[in-house]
Length: 198
View (cartoon, rainbow, N blue to C red):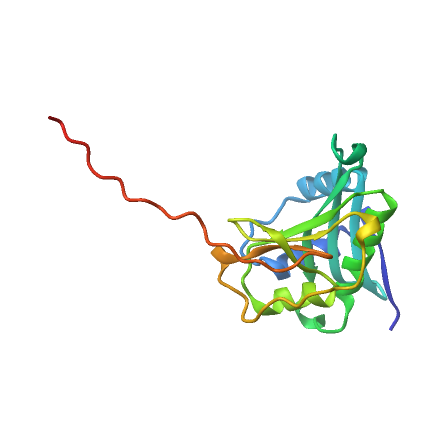
């Protein structure tokens, strides 16, 4: 069996749809015309759809969107979406290979950072990102966890481990290649006292 991480093409549409169904079986199914139009648009955008292929069987994927930017000297940034490994092929490094291909593509596109966010509190998900060399960022997001690859000159091996256990979803920190974990609580909700009509 030969594994390759590569850019997707229109010929990979059926395999990508199978991967996405494996991730979210309850999602509505796209009509063939809509699926073709969406993939065509994604392939035309800067970045790309990356896949892990074993002799024609798609076993992993991730999508990189390279977005224009007016800060950081006009360098773009990358947003990663739809990181999926086929459930029957997890634990073999196929997902990690695709994430690393995405990070490399972000470097080639001169992105000052490549980031992804997850709202999943599953410790296995966070262990996967650690295995990709990512650590938790010092910035926090209320909606989930962000994993980011910061500026090229700051790339270095993971420096700090994320404290276990992984905090619940409302306390997840953002993730970065060189940052450190920091969980933050959502802002407290103050109860409003009823206004007097007098």
